[in-house]
Image: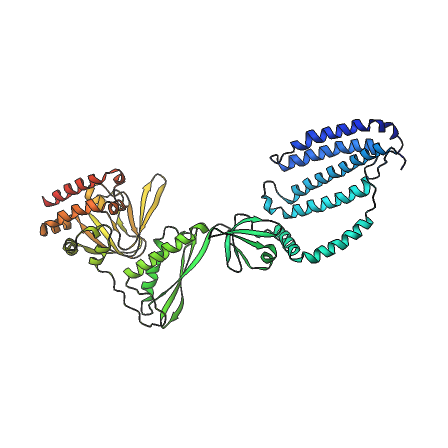
Length: 495
């Protein structure tokens, strides 16, 4: 092919131009590191491509209609220059594709679409280099490649199905790495990677489930991380059909309110979903902040349900049995025996205290003890739920929720320091109260009770520390100080 007008005088400088191109490629391209922002890399590639285009035009004339030298040596190097121009142009197009298809800092696993575009550009660039740079007709090559493509397509049907399903997933983006995903068939876990052929899911059993994208595209999916990370769940409980519905509802409400893991907003729902001869079914719906808290929330809720139903005297239903075994409401003696605080006292001494306890009934919102008040009595929760709050600089803060069988006010009563928290009934509350005067009367009637209470202080330190209504500085008091203060307290009662 004859050289274009004005090109012959530039051919002797071809080695110099080639050296310049190689120098630019050696200096600029290695510096386009992946740590640079994508737009900076694209701009640098465009600048390099513009410079390369000017140099190629000086060597072969037009990049789309090149005019090569007749000399074999120069012709070869000019073809190399033309091929480099096409390769550089493909890199610019790939960079632009990634810039428009994938936002900066997206995980590589989600770049399926941009990878497909890059592959198409690479194939087109290879054909252009063969056709324009080396002047080899590509019609026959295209026809041959079409036959090969048909053969490969038939042989790789399942793989291609996974690939195109992966493209669809990449376009739709129903989930992303890190999301908690449920896949029809029982697979549930956090998405680890999304690639061309499959989606990898880390299950709760510390396994990696590799699910082909073709199955993902056809299966029902539930993204538990969208629109928020909060997770909802339901529990079903069947109780004795003879139980009074209002009592069942109050017991279940108290069980839910005393759960610390369950979110208060949105509020939990409690609904009666079935009535049969062998039981009444209640469904409890709740929400936790993250999926990781779900197991802990279910365990806590089941435990609280058992406790509150037992203290309300409500039996669980037994399938096929119309009348299950009756569950009696725990007596005061049983409450004292099961209590962490009074459980360390001998049975005889516990029995001597029972006549001095007085029953109190509170409605929701009423106060059991108030922060800053001088302690005159302690309380044992028999039924219902109470919320313990502390007033601080930022306002009121919930520190605990009490259930039946728990005590409050014991440490304040022993140490003589004001209550450090306020206890408010969340539901209708039944509590047993015993005051200083009552304890003094019990010791007077049974002097050996003082020794039992000393043993309580010696063996019941953990229970005493769980008394959230005690003094704010009780955590700083050493165990032996409890015994000393208790002895002073008992001496004061005896006098």
